[in-house]
Image 1 (cartoon, rainbow, N blue to C red):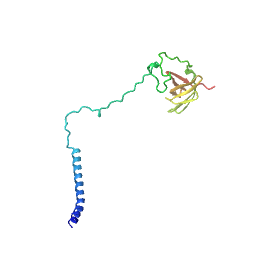
Image 2: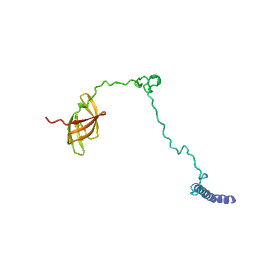
Image 3: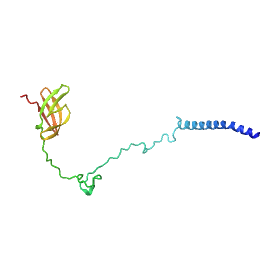
Image 4: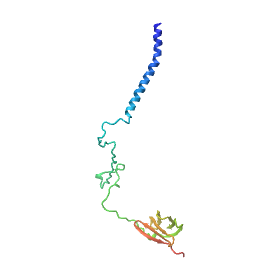
Length: 172
């Protein structure tokens, strides 16, 4: 009979013990969180200037440096080790291609509005400030339309560093 009473008391005490231990754990966590997040908690080094640490200093990323070798003993292309195209020569390369003169360009027409004029140069349409490839008798050339004057029928173009004014040809 005494064993039955002790077992009954033990069963009744177990939920109470769990409740007490959970309450104590909650109290300890609340107190520890309150002391670490407290606005009145001041660091021990208040008033002392701290030196910059690596975590708060902005360091620019390192710049890559590429050196093009002049001969094979200075380095090789890692992807094409048998290639000789990477080696730079000190002698300037002379252009053997034909020099395209701006004289090969012909202004075919001007249209559009005064706010957005259009010019047709060698069958390629341009607006002011636009840059396009134009087919000429000597091949393709890169042309930039600098200005279009609808009143006078002229277009200012730039080919390389050279600027020229193209005029509309009179009707035949």
